[in-house]
Structures are given as structure tokens and as C-alpha cells.
Length: 192
Image 1: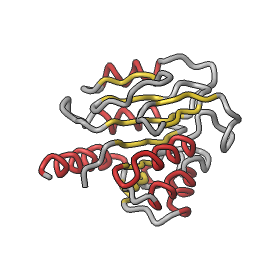
Image 2: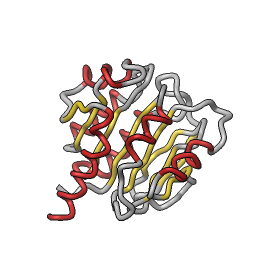
Image 3: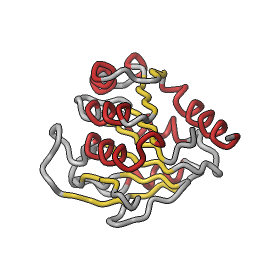
């Protein structure tokens, strides 16, 4: 299966967790990655700058109407929902909080599932609430691939446990295996 995009949802413990995953990706990695990390509403773009400095791919905060490009990593800005539009652009919204969060993982995952369908990979990582479980279920129902961090390796296990309880996920992986697994998916993609 040729995947086009990966969506990642993460909350408590996310900065270090994302660093451990994204540093595995080679500079020629050609899938788009779109991330919702729960952040304080008044945060700046520190997370994107931190990851960009440590990753071989470009990491940036998503902009309104930005075209989703292969090999780029987009982070939802603080206090904005991040959505994927039918024309494969990103949009930002200040609609009400979902699961007590803005940005909401569910909002990103559900809109990405509508656009990418079976060509989408959804990943739920460490976190302290249930945001993302509904969106991961929609990705699975749309034929996409679903991955959840093994709760035993999560800084906070609530979010991975909720995702596992909500749908039959394809893979439950310890944190240290997620980056290499994404690389192996990409290697298979290149052979097709």
C-alpha cells in the first residue's frame, strides 16, 4: 500500500516522544507528517523549532491554506484546530474545544481520514486524556493503518489505552520501535 500521509496525536510527554520517533526518518522520507501536540494556548513555535533542529526533515508550524507537501512535518499551532481539506491543504480553526483540547487530535484525524482514506497512517502516542481515540477509529474504518504506542512505554498511558479500547488497532508498539517501523513502511512503499 502506498501511503500518502501520517497523522500523529500526542499530549503529555510529547516533545521527547516525538524527538525519539522523528530522528529515525531519513532525509529522503517522502510521506507528509501532520502532528497535533497538545500545548498551552500561549505557547510559541518552540516545539517546531526544537524538532526541526534535531530532525533531517523540515518541521514547521502549519499555516492556513498551506499545501501538504511530501517529506514535510507540520505541527498544529497552539490554540488552533488543524484540519485537512479536500484539496490536500491545511486549515486552521478556532472552533470550540474538542475533548477539552484545541488543537484536537480527533479533529485532525477525522478530517485526514476523509481525505486520505486507506492511504493514511494514524499514530496515537503518550497523553493524559482520550483525545484521538475517536479519530483513530475513523482512520481504521476508512481503511487506514493504525498504530498506538504501547501504554507501558508511554509517559502517560491514558491516551494510548483509550485508543486501544476504542478500536482494533493494527499495531501496538513500544516507543523505541515506532520510528524504525515507520521507516520500514516507507521502504516497502518504495519497492511497490
